[in-house]
Length: 413
Image 1 (cartoon, helix red, strand yellow):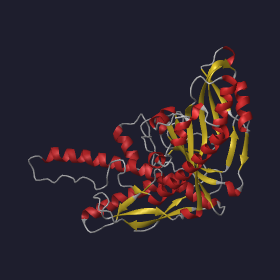
Image 2: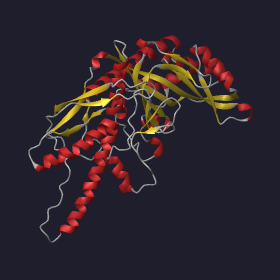
Image 3: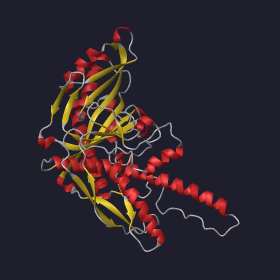
């Protein structure tokens, strides 16, 4: 059992042979799929980071009793939040006027959300309860001592241990990828829809055409127009406005590694997160298991039998897959291998009928959702605690907003 190194590749600057070390730890699990295996855990001290969950933005869908123009709605929203909002009309008519609008408020506080709905109700008359159309939640990892390498190690740890909680492989636009600046996406795991299924499986087993994600790019899982998608990045810029071409370069102590999930109305409906009262009562800790789930790879740790030796040979391929693509690619590799061995077993059984030939045994590596992976417990606990703290801050802020504005009708359950 030896340590391995994962290169911290960069696309924008020269690589300095920076690496993230992973160390082996023998598992004591009695689960059949994990007996005799060891996990690889990154050489990373989570206590060296300030870990905080935040709401990046909220999209509110508001509907008025009369039509109005977008710039008028935006004027009143901006005046209340003391900053820039984005206002988009829903089904606009002539002159771009509309009854309904989606209003985006970035880095919102409950007071800003309540004040926005209150002023819009006063000025235009809300004819229905404001609805949540989208929400983005992030978890930030800020080095307590500003350090570029510390951020890079955390970014790579997030990229290599994060497992999307829905299928992001079958739909082409969903597939895990990295984007540097405004460049074209580099897909983590090679796939060509024109290839036969058996050929696609070969690429899942091999690392030959994989594209490791650079730590100074943005990692995506899920299509941007899907019900939910994720991003992982080294956040060094903020308040970017592509239309105006403006941005704020963060100071060294503000720079951080980040993972974020963007959820649209369909996903929010599944979570029963539809209105401001729902947001006030929502248990954000449930997002950890649903959207911020982290795993570690495991490998064979015994070499007592011929089968052990064969498993360790396969593990060399699995190790290469993990180094290139993290647990996302490794899990696909394990599924492909299980499919391959399943087909071989079926063919062997068919050919061995009436003979004394042995049939291949099923692989010990699991082929289900977790497969050969184990939970990255320390990371999951840290993220859960950050989400719990966010929940507490929101509860306090909503109560403060109630004291300021009183019991407005759209905050009543």
